[in-house]
Structures are given as structure tokens and as C-alpha cells.
Amino acid sequence: MMKKYFTYILLFGSPLFLCQNKTDGKSTYQQSWVTLEEENAALAFDADIQLTNPELALDKKLFEVRKQFLSETEKQKIPIYNSSFNQIKPLIESSSLFKIFQTMPKGGLLHTHSGGLASMKWVISTARKYKECYVFDQKDTKDFIYGQLAFFENGKAPQGFVSLDKKLVANPDFENELLGLLTLKRDNLCSYNDYWIEFEKRFTRINLLLPYRPFFKEYYKEGFRELLKDKIQHVEIRYVFDELYDFQHGKYPLKTSITDLQDIVKEIRKSDPQFSLKLIYSSFKFLDSESIGKQLEIAFGLKKEFPDMISGFDLVADEAAGHSINSFQKNWSKLNELSVKYGVQMPLFLHAGESASVFNKNILDVSLLNNQRIGHGFNLIYFPKTMELIKKQNRLVEVSPISNQILGYVSDLRNHPARVLLSNGVQCSINSDDPSVYGYDGLSYDFWTAFVFWELDVKALKKLVFNSINYSSLNDNEKKQSLAYLNKEWDSFIQKTNMDLK
Ligand SMILES: [Zn+2]
Image: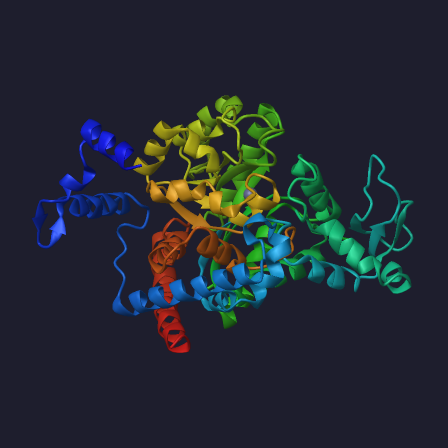
């Protein structure tokens, strides 16, 4: 062994010799190490944040709380790194960290979808109160699938549909079965590959519920209530427009969804004046260019009428199955012309790079377009030149850690690609995507996940929270007010948590 060591020194010199030059009591090697560490940290997304003394104190305490949590799971042999979100959900809920995150102001939820908002338990218990609500309880047909919910006038339900309430009364176990059909879990981390097939069935099962105007109103009131309870003050919904209807009037024009939502927000602001909402007009990547052209015209028309409600345009659905963003070049090249025609801008908020494949190059397009924020964007780590551009353009990546695990893009959350983005200085925010489909509400679960698995500190948390307002589509005045509220809430959270964790 000694011989080997001397041969090594003869060949390469002793690394110890480097350490002999000492200044200020530190070896030059150690000084270089410290400098290198600082240089790396200076490139991170949160490098501009200076913590106050109370924030630094809380940082130390949260570090200890997490350390204790991890050593306890180790002691109890709970394999948290090899578990799905659903498996560790009860553990998350029972942790003291989770209770802290529930009280943390989250700012805005920038990435969520219509249909993925209010919890499915609530959906079932509320839908059954409508005597006109039915559930399809036969094997899938070409028109309907098992567990699909819908409203029909008395006596007009198609064959295979039964009254939801009667079915639940006759078979109380059906409630749990239905809940399973409306939510998506990833209990066994490798039982199947195409998660999107099952994922989309969840939306099919409630798609016919949401346009029914009385239910629509209740749904969004509940969705917003759940967000407020979790200390979320602003929300931007990737919104798929559908004509609302009821049995007295039939169909309403598209804009009724907007005016109804405005009324709901107005009502909520009576008790929670900080609450705000923006809609991102969303169409689908599986449509052809001609259809997207028509969708863009509708989006521009709505934005012209409701410039404070519609913030931009997106294309959603599975990127692997749909068309590439690049294939819609013709549509994107007409955006300027449409802006002139309607007198409003239509920034893009595209889902791009929700993929573990380098063959998905959607992320290249977003850096070439007027794209404000990127939905998911985690395969950006494979395109270093584009990553540079995104940083220069100061665009934000909307990260949804739990969604990414449930849809199979990452298993061990410690290896989430967003960590690469954060350390390389790409701005991000934390999002829940479709929390109701994943069986939870709010943003606390996603923040817990990011804090524990990505070893975040208070500096990173603060930057993520404030990014969600700074990169929102609130106008300057709204943003100013929203930031003033968030600052106040943040300070009192720091003060209160510091006291609780004495
Ligand atoms: Zn999404």
C-alpha cells in the first residue's frame, strides 16, 4: 500500500504540497475550494436573494426538522426514495414539515388545468346532490366509459347510465371505486409504461360534468376555496373553453364561463381581497394547424373583450402523442397579423419538454417564440444552448414535481431534472398541474416534495414563492398589490414559524 502511495507521489506530486502555502490560516487549496463553491452558488437561480436574520434563523431550524424527519424514516425503514407520492402521502401529512408548509404563503399557482382543480371527493359528494347526475356503469363503449359522469334531463339518460345518488345508496362501496376511477396513482413504480392513457380517462370521466352551469359555478368556488386554504393568492388556469349549458336555457356563449368566473372571483374577494385569477386559452396539440388557426381567432376575440382575464395561449395534452410545436409554424407566424387585427397581444405559455426524450424538441421552439413561461420544460437539461437562451430571455419554467412522478417521467424525486435547471440559474416556480386527478389539493405537497428531495433552503423557497408572482401575468398594478400582500404574509410566516420552532 505504502509503495503504491510513493509511486503516486513520484508520478503526480503530492496534493498535500499544494496545501502548504497558508494565508489567513487557510491553505490555498482550501481557499480555492471555498471560491469554487461560491462561484457555483453564484450561478444558481436564487443567487440574488439576501436572507434577513430571522430568515437565516428559520433556515437553520428547517434544516434540523428535515434532518430529524429523514433519520426517523431511516430508523423505521421507510423507503421514501423508492416510493410513489401516493405511498408516502400519509407520511407527508403526518410530518411536522407538512404542517409548516401548509402555513407558508405560496404566492401564485401558475400551472394548473380546468378539470384538475377541485378535489374528486368533493366532486362525487356534490355531483350526487343533483338528481340529474348520472354515472355510466357498463363496460366502455365507443361513446362512454365506465365511471363517466354526466347530467341528463329526467328520463333522457342514454342506456348504461344510472342515477349517481341511487347507485351510491345501493352500493356504498362504489364511492371508493369511483374515487379510484377519477384519480391517478402510481403505486407500483413500474407496472405499466403509458401513463397518459389512464390519465386522460380521468378527464373523460368528468368532462361532461363541468359545462353544466350550476355545477360549473360550484366547482370553481370550491377549487378557489381549496387554493386559498393552502395560502395561494393567485391562480392561472390553462383553460379549455366549452359552452356552458343548463336545461332551462340550453347553451350559453363561450364568454359566459369568463363572466361567471369573474362573478365568483368578485364574491371571493369580499372575504379574501388578495385573490386573483387569469385564464390561459388552451387548445390541443393533437389538432391540426387549420383547427389551431380557428382556436387562435377565438382566443384573440375573447382576449380583446376580456384583456384582464385572458393572458395568453397554450397547447396541451401528451407531447409524445400530439404534433410538435414546430409543426404549427404557420400559426405562430400569423400571431403578429392577428395582434394587429384584434388590437391585443397573445403571449404563449406553451407546455414544452414534458418528456424524458431528446427526440422531443418542443423546447427549441419556445425560445424562438414570444413564450412567457414554459409548462414543465424538464427536457431543457438536454439542450444547453436553449437553456442559455431561456436564461437570457428571463423566462420561467413551471415545475410540477408530483405530476412528473405520477406520469412516469421521474421515479426517485431526488433526480428530478428541475434541480439541474435551478443550479444552472433557470428561473422556476412550483406547481401542482392537476392536483385533483392526483388525489390532493393545494401546493403544500409539492413544496414539501421539493424541500425534502431537492434539499432546498429558505433562500430557494423564498425565490420559488416570489417567482410565482413576479412571473405571473398580473399587470403592473395588480402585481404591485399582490407582492405587497405576499411580502407581508411572508414576514409573518417567518416570524410565527421561528416562534413555533423555538
Ligand atoms: Zn399541465
